[in-house]
Amino acid sequence: LGLVRTVDLDLDNGDTRIEMTLTTPACPLGPYMEDSIHQTLRQLAWVGQVEVVIVWEPAWVPERDMSEAAKRQLGWR
Image (cartoon, rainbow, N blue to C red; front, side, top):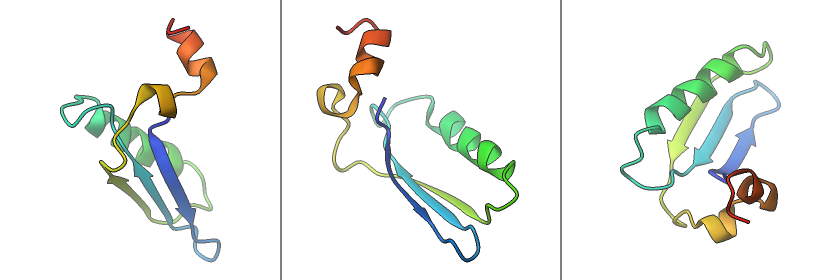
């Protein structure tokens, strides 16, 4: 869906910072997605601390942020 904005990885210690957005500020899946990122990355031995930051700028726009494959999969095209 194009929700991940940036991933910064410190190659020395594996610390990872992920900036992501949500489709709307009221998106009920925000905590679930943040938790899923933490759980998934914890499984990788080389990953250190994980920070997930929700950002609102730029706002999520499906026409710009979704890949063509995602649009097709969701029936948008």
